[in-house]
Length: 105
Image 1 (cartoon, rainbow, N blue to C red):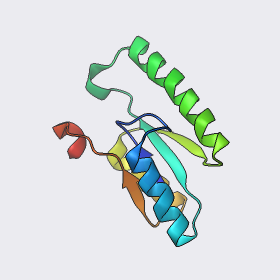
Image 2: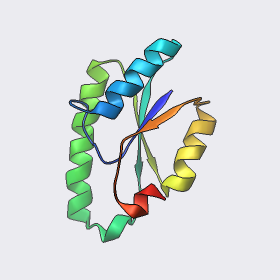
Image 3: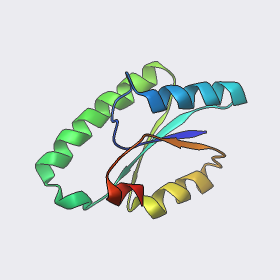
């Protein structure tokens, strides 16, 4: 069971994460959180990536306190996320809502 973190990059007050935790518990499965680092998302600068990665380090720390592993994968999400799910034998994937058209594709 995995939660694909994208827009809501936080371990607290995250409704999708709470739903994924509840679903994993009902299924008796371990929950993992995966974040896909796209190398060229909307022209983000190195400064923006640095800020995001520092925040994700905090997320990883918060998740570790809850015994939830955090995985950072790189590449295009349409390839990297299915590959992650296949390698880790993920049967259910939960993600957060994102209204951006590019990400909804």
